[in-house]
Every structure is written in C-alpha cells, then in structure tokens.
Length: 253
Image: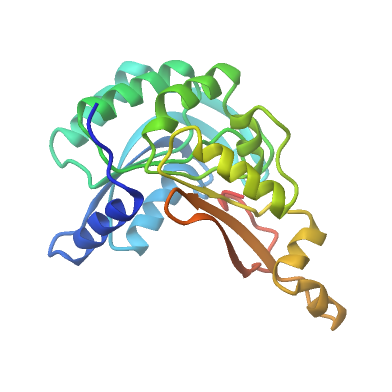
C-alpha cells in the first residue's frame, strides 16, 4: 500500500498548489443534484470560489430539490471507472473528494480506482443521510465504506446521523456525544475526522457559544459546534455563530 500523508502534510501540499501559478485540481466523485444545491454542483461552486479547478465523476443522478430527494438513478460502475480514469489519467488531481456513493459496487469501484491512480489526499464525505433526512446508502454500502474508504481517508466529514450509522449506534445528540463519536470514528482509520454539528438540539446549540444569554436579550441563539479529531491534536471543538436561515439544502449538516 502507498504511504498516506499526515493531515498537516496534506494541507501543506494543497496550500503549495494554491500558491503556484496553476490552479490545483480537485476531482469530486459524487452524485448530481438536479436542484443545484448539493452534490457535484455544490462541489464545483466551492471549487470555483476557492480558485480550484474542479473535475467530476458522476456516480448517481438524483431528482432532487430543496424539499428532498425524489428519485435516484445509479450510474453503471464501469462508466464511473471510465470517468475517473479519463480525468486522473490526463489532468491528475491534487485531491479527490467523494460524496454520495449509493452501493457497495460503486464504493469498490471508486476505492480500486483511487488506489491504482495513487491518490494520496482523499476527503471522504460519507453521504448516507441527506439534510432532508432521506437515506442515500443502505447497510451494505455503509459496510463497504467502512472497509474500503475510511481507512484511506485523509479527512472524514460525516454529519451526526452519518456518524451514528458508521459506528452502528444512535446519532450523537450532544457535544459530549459528538466528541466521543469523533474519537471512535478516528479509530476506524482516517487521518482526521470533522464531525458536523448542524443538527445539535437547541439547548446544546445555545450552550455552545453563549446562545442562551443572547436569546434572553431577545436575539436568536447563535451556538454552533463542529468537532475535529486527529492523532496530533486530539479532539477539538470548533465554535461558530449559527447562520440565521432555514435553507439548509447542501449544508452537510
């Protein structure tokens, strides 16, 4: 097996690419969102905003809007592989990000391709449960994700329901449970874990950043916590102000 760079080394490599004359290349291997708010459409918008050249390999088509996922049409595994080979065999990629991988076959195909192309920096977003609550990957796919992709991840980025699904337990509902889940996910092999806390219950969210005090003054609660974990820094709480919107499609929360 090829050696994996540490999370810090991976970040340094990406930063050096951004500082160079040519834009770094990122390949997103994920599903398409017909509503334009999530999936590869959102990834490409993020790449554009950050000065990264985004490329794609479609794994599934979805009939989707802000209300939910209405239908999913998987792309044949052979064609998924053909897309990855076409991009990595020509332009290469500084990093690869995976998103919705709806089946065990798709996950095995992607894992094999990334290994054969020696992709070192891998952002694995285990898209198992959409923000709308729709389940996008069944038990066999979750098991394949844990077996084939999590141990190779530079960083794993689950939301709270996805963390529970990967660990085979109920989703965390508090900051302390998020901390424990992030540490347990790190034991599955990724270099780092970023557990997104957008679904924290209101009392937990308020406690995160003095939100209760602000609410008492007539303002909205502002607490927001993500939990980061790696071997070097341990478990770290990342605290922010919560955005005042109900439009959470593609928030990854």
